[in-house]
Length: 143
Image 1 (cartoon, rainbow, N blue to C red):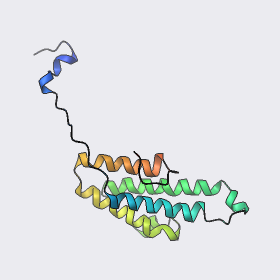
Image 2 (image 1 turned 30 degrees about the horizontal axis):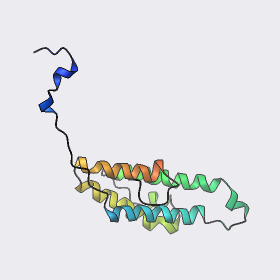
Image 3 (image 1 turned 60 degrees about the horizontal axis):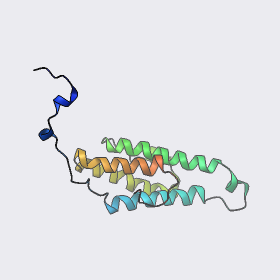
Image 4 (image 1 turned 60 degrees about the vertical axis):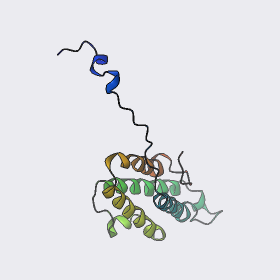
């Protein structure tokens, strides 16, 4: 059977529309991400004493971005089932934030093991939005 155009490939009655919205991100997941970003902001950005040269140095912004980028990469690896919670990886973060980083990475691993492929999409987007695209947004809602 030959098709003259792409339109012939899909008849109207074959089109299936999914009207069910994807599941919302779990509150525990959101809170963990919010907590780790708050902790990194507190320890890195707000760490230096106000009025000092260190407080005005752009290096603190770069350090914050690097921490979030590291967390993003580790989260991607956790999504794929790799073991990422270890001393080598945790030592990339300030000591005050390591426990919160550990919680986030364990949650990513846990959720991505139990979610279906379709249900993972909102979580993947949330991780990307939190750590890569909206690094300076300090709330837990990207709607």
